[in-house]
Length: 88
Image (cartoon, rainbow, N blue to C red; front, side, top):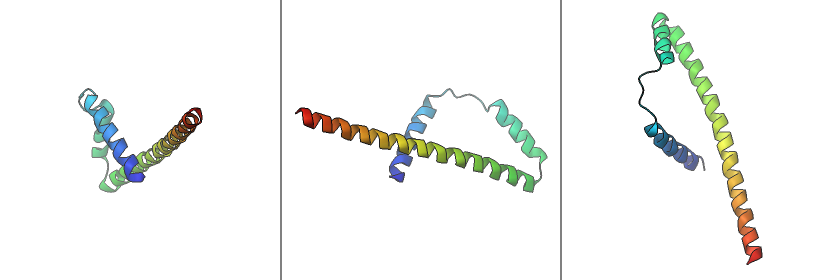
């Protein structure tokens, strides 16, 4: 199940990303890089770990809601199937 979700999300993201405008590095990315250049190696690692933790937390939330939507979709499919069988 995890692999299916991951593959689907990866494919959908890749397709979406290809359709996006190819704009240069955003202003916030430039500011972030400039900030990193002023930090020591240890400080840079701490900031990077913190950013990674934030991104991971967001990914967990997205996966939760994706799974919930998938479960709801399967339940809806089964309900529609049952109704169609009763009608037939």
